[in-house]
Length: 261
Image (tube, rainbow, N blue to C red):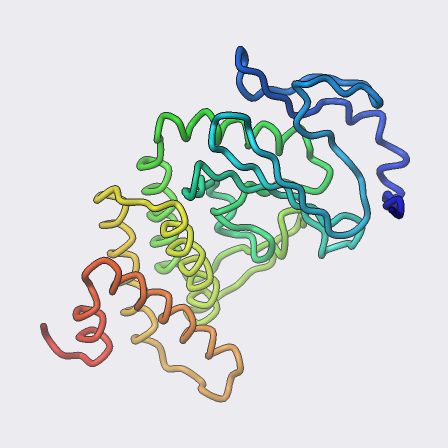
């Protein structure tokens, strides 16, 4: 089996990355400094600096928990480091508000951190594991949805291309904002489905957001020659599917056709 190459950054800084993700019945998920070469039974995952796409799946014994760690290092703006956490078939979501203003490699269904920020990623995984057992979701979800709803009322927003980019770009005007918000709405409803969210308050807020987005798009004078306009159709399709799944299909149709139910 070929040995994977590591990035130049990793070769220069790897001695700083000794903190590993561990698990024991006594302490649950935690981090510990484990020297290279040591392999205690508690060790789940060791940081790495492999170049290119890497995916590793970890199962916590007897807990029906699967952690997937994904990285793509050494590729500039295309690089990323993230993880997903599943309790059985239920995805654990991350309603980090800053994700709303990141364009690429950032979803509520994953825990995203700047490349090589292994300690931060492990902390997010541990918090997700501890939080999921308590089923703490509603407050964070509502705050996230409220912020996304407020975005539709603004004249401009600041958007970063990826989580590592320091300087954001200004997006102004209803069209650009609806493009960005539409992508985040697609991610939101897909995440709520993956997490099997049934909380009536969260679903109510999400439905209200969908209604607001429909009205936002309908109020615009669109340029159908603009290749980006088709993205609005994709966002409305996600809204349609979500509303149909939550007994709002007829309402969606009435709003699109300007017909009262």
